[in-house]
Image (cartoon, rainbow, N blue to C red):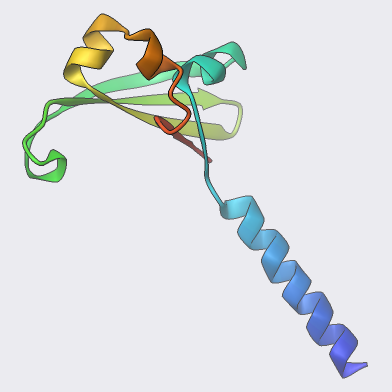
Length: 91
């Protein structure tokens, strides 16, 4: 009985960890799935290693995505950048 209970608790923690994990998707696929842009923030400084970047926050229902773009790529809306599957973190 103790082994069964321990196994059940372990499975519960694994399932919970999977729910909290973030995935990466492209900006274009998120927009196609119905995400709305909630904010676009320009950042430059120590946290971005003095690079000019845009941080784009999207939301759909209870899911949130944060996308990072260099200033040039965001301003030009580069197709390859918008399709890059590692550009946005989704929770």
